[in-house]
Image 1: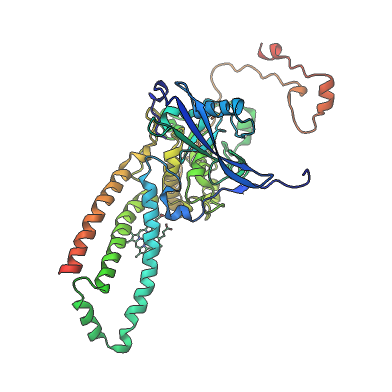
Image 2: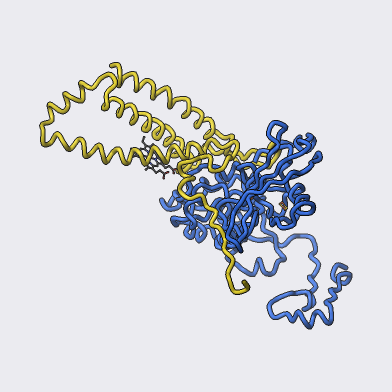
Length: 155
Length: 305
Ligand code: HEM
Ligand code: SF4
Ligand code: FES
């Protein structure tokens, strides 16, 4: 036994932590949910843009007018409108939360001021205006998504 | 971390089940084990663990030292959240409805045995950011007779960040560190900001340039879990955002730190330092065996007089 090296476990959750905010159940931390949603929506948009370029390249062979007309006709619940609706949801969250992240990560604002710890010991950045902006994102997101859905499906 | 100052005054459930994630490195085996513990008011998770170790199962391994939230060695995942075991009241994490507490070793660290994790890499990252005051004139520090002044306002700006006890909970909570082992992590980066923003430190340029790498603040995505779990309210998440925005300004040539103030000799008389006797310095090359035969006697009385 003496020579044998004991094993250790690598206890990192890995990429799962990027798609599951509840790998840990950290309290008072909606930012983590936003982090996961932002990452997932960003990656989905990158994938969708590739598909988008591929699809919008097709009419080059079949004629643009007919294609544009067909897209304009898309109404009610079809594969095309459902896809638009799905994309709108992704884009609204990523865009809205992206503005918040730009303020926080690049300008270093909205994260409060350092303070002396006192009960109940909540870190300043978790009660600063970025948190209010986050709640605003979670409020505006479904509203704007629903409005886009209305336009996509019924207008 | 949010603390409820009233928690210690509440009575926890009379009996609490501890579900502990065990790991035996010799058999390379992981399993969950349950222990029932009788509680009392004011009992912490660490108290319960020690009780289990004393009365039920001596083989449980964990790390602790101060048992009062100062040394930072008893971090573990308690009911899914990284916490200090000694600072967590049973009444905070167990209820009559669910008298169960789940304990796991900290995530993002290699597990040596049971709840014991290996902090070597974490401390190496801490070391790599040079967590100490750097002055251009080394003598000022080495001589130790002068004071480096700052205003109370300047002190307030960085006081929060000086409270870190290197418990590593923030690193354990970080979803970036979960997949990228190279990431310096909240603790080390908060330390970089603590010294970059310190009006007495003169190495801000070197610090900013050293941290302008992929594993530096650029890798942070502000999930803010670090700030949510920190038991000392250090707010490492905010420190990283400040560091990053200053780094952006610096790279655009828009940031210049105020030059540090000169060190001043205090006006009051400084007592000349007495040199320590050679035996009191336990440096490399000390002959422990020889010391065993003739125990060291540090002339404490003489030194403090
Ligand atoms: C309104 C427009 C947009 C804004 C304001 C925005 C903002 C941001 C910001 C601030 C980040 C950094 C987030 C972080 O550090 O965690 C980010 C990440 C990202 N964005 Fe966007 N973005 C926008 C549009 C897009 C589009 C159109 C795409 C798809 C091509 C996209 C794909 C991504 C991806 C893949 C990431 C990386 C996600 C991660 O690593 O977590 N974004 N975005
Ligand atoms: S910043 Fe807070 S959580 Fe991180 S090591 Fe320091 S005291 Fe622990
Ligand atoms: S034992 Fe020292 S912090 Fe818990």
